[in-house]
Amino acid sequence: MKERAAAWNWDEISDRCDEWVASQITELAEEIHTILGNIEQGKAAAAAAERSQVAMGLAQTLSVHKRIAYESENDLWDLVADAMGGRYGELQRKALAQDEISLKDSLAAAMQLFVIAAAETHAFLGEDQQGVVDRASELASDRLDGDATGATV
Image (cartoon, rainbow, N blue to C red):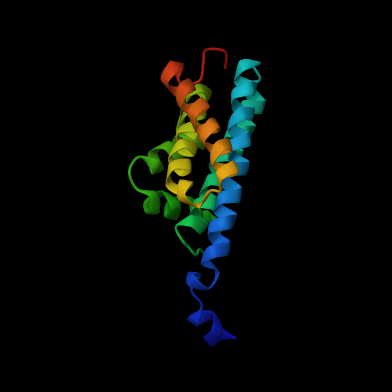
């Protein structure tokens, strides 16, 4: 069993991984709609909870997309940030409210993470999934261009 485990690689399940990633990104698109709805309704706690789900879900999803194996979820966040590069780590810290940050800015960071992840995984999405994910990305981007998250939260 030890030899088999040592010989294992992501190629054995690559297609299934890509399908799972597409499914997860599509599900997270719904959370973007929920965040925006909560912002519009002034439901700060609900928006914060959804923000956390998006940030956590993206890390798990992108770890499979980037084929990152990790022993502990405690390492997941740093491994994904390193693999994604660019501003991803900074945005992840903000989305997880790791530093002192306003709710408005952490919500904006979570939506930016989603937009990045959606673009990164777009090639794996089916046509229906692309429509769902593209719409959520568009709404998130519009909100970010408008005033980060709106003034109500």
